[in-house]
Amino acid sequence: MKPHVPLLIYLLLIVVAVAFPQYAKTVATIAFFMALGQAVNIFVGLTGYVDFGYVAFLAMGAYGLGVVVYYWPQLGMLALPLGVLLGVAMAASLAMAVGAIALRLRGAYFAIATIGVNEGIKHLIVGANLWGGGAGLILGTSMFRAFGRDAALWLANVGSTVLILATGLLAVVAMYLIQASRAGYALAAIRQDEDAAKAMGINPTKYKLLAFTTSASLSGLLGAAYYPLGNMQVFPENVFFIEYILDGLAVMFIGGAGTVTGPIIGGLVYILARDLVGSFLPGMQVLAIAALLMLIVILLPRGVVGTLRQHLPPGVREWLP
Image (cartoon, rainbow, N blue to C red; front, top):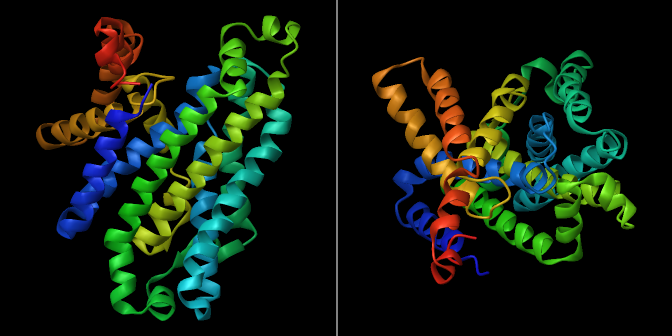
């Protein structure tokens, strides 16, 4: 299989964001939900486990970059790569710590175990007054000092969009590498029957933790690109916004869980449906998306891409991995 459609979509969006900066923020919104669905898909789609802790990984990525820029603007342009690396490392470390314990649970028990992660870390940051506490981090002045005014504005508009798109591209590559490796076959076996996989000599916790940490790392990178870089601020109420968990799951299921192209198509459908409903029925977006998701699950249980792949000839099917 070759990632034709994912690559074409991302290359087109990168060209639009760079060539037409006035549309960069629109592209960033679309790309954010696409990448969020892809990050969720790498764990949920490959293992069948439902995780409600993704917002914490987004937040760790956001705080990683935000803290470096806010407290050490004297680093200049070096603050950007160091902050991004710190955010990804924080998200990956949290995933390994949580996953080492929670991934020994199954099904609803695992889902319940991850619910408190988001709120627990949020209240820790606010209650202990870490990294600005409840007041958050306002990064405009620090970004101007670190990068210069023009560069900071370009990074907030175009640079953040390109980094979000790069996150999506990395998710495509990660999905391919996992599926084509021994880990992909192990995860497929675990998804079908974990007890049988264990009897065959597969270590379920090891492979689930690999997918979990990969997914969390991409979420951390996405959080760094979207909040501190794109919005020049990090507020607990925003980065720990619980609805992003449901958004990621909705995007994945609409497009097709376990597919590479599914979350990309799901993100496009999700944004289009949300904006259309918001234009004609303001305030009804959540209800409409819930109804759309139920219809997709009932009528297209494999999602849009999964269903299309069933009816396309093999030569064309390769374009929708």
